[in-house]
Length: 463
Image 1 (cartoon, rainbow, N blue to C red):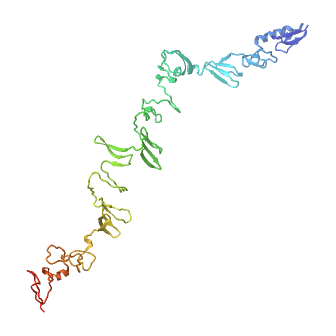
Image 2 (image 1 turned 60 degrees about the horizontal axis):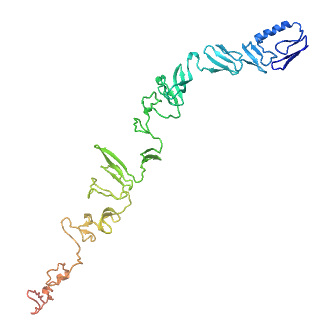
């Protein structure tokens, strides 16, 4: 009668007729009355003991069948499609050869576990070798008054270098170098540890030290502060045209435009003052009134070059202006024009003394009525030959004219002793005729008794 061989799940592996053997699996399966079945049965038992140990996998495995891979010294199980390692790591000093993906290997020299990816061994942990002692991150729980805190501690050579925490707290159990733990990374204070390298930003800067560690690593105390008064021993360069802005309302600016520098008071109608400490007293030296633009200077002023004034000059200190210069030059640089001195009066136009380039002479007068100022150079000593000139005496004191015309002379009446008019030539000629108030003439006849008054003179001209 034929044997029907079933698997655990009830499915049929093989049907074996009497006197035959089935080799469709790793083991030999016998039918009834098979001759020599004892040897084959014993071989089956040996294969089960050694898990079919061989460098080649069984050719007809069943799902769940074990096979010891003699080339990798691993026990493997058939999953229905291939043999896979059953687990367990190899413990040896060198990398295992002929590994399969998923294999584990413990490096017996460094006490580190590796995972085979199918192409290389990948370190699973720990990250440090046994000879390096504890190094890297370690998750720890620290006690505090606010309860236990889970932190990540960074170790190097079995020394805790830093603690990473999500919150700030004070450990209730002493932690060497960590009296206070802050949110973020806290460094071990006993190591003098600092962050070194580059960072794009920082919440604060320690200014407690001014000792630089190198020419490129500068202590925080050597940086100028923006929130407090500070001092620098170096030059301060602002390499942009916007320049310097000073004041709570940014009143004072120093700026540059096209290489031209502007010092500005930007508050509307506010003053600008430059002062000096004179003998311990702060004294205003230059004051500019913002509302009017008026400028006041206190102290002596020395000007090298030209002083050009487009407005008026006013002196409020003295009625007399004193100049040490030998000459005061006006009208410089202008085309020839009248120039001189103007004195304010109550007339329509003030009194003036000026030089008139058109006639090359000095003029004087007021209320637009000016005449020539006579100088010695204008006079001549011979008036009779220079009739239009001003006359002066010659070197001998002689005053010479060709003639004198007195257009404003008066006549003298007989008996008039109060008239101061200069007599004319005619008055002088007829003086004798009019003597005594009567019409007298020089005559050859003697006067009668009615021709005169007491004291009269009579001139008799002989025939």
